[in-house]
Image (cartoon, rainbow, N blue to C red; front, top):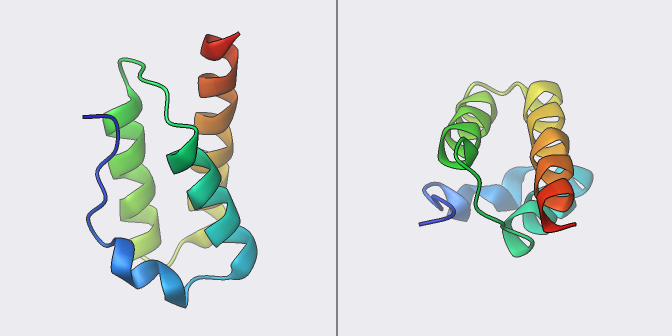
Length: 70
């Protein structure tokens, strides 16, 4: 499994820019060993209201996915 979509229904309450980033990471999902952990960590940030750290984690995930994709 590449992503864990727990809490996806609560995404509608997030800022628009964060929603775009979440969807981009999810739509461009590319497996790498730490991806499940990174996704869970990002969800923890969101649940705690730490949008800046969630954004940072998502940006890192996107870079990692894009680098692996080549």
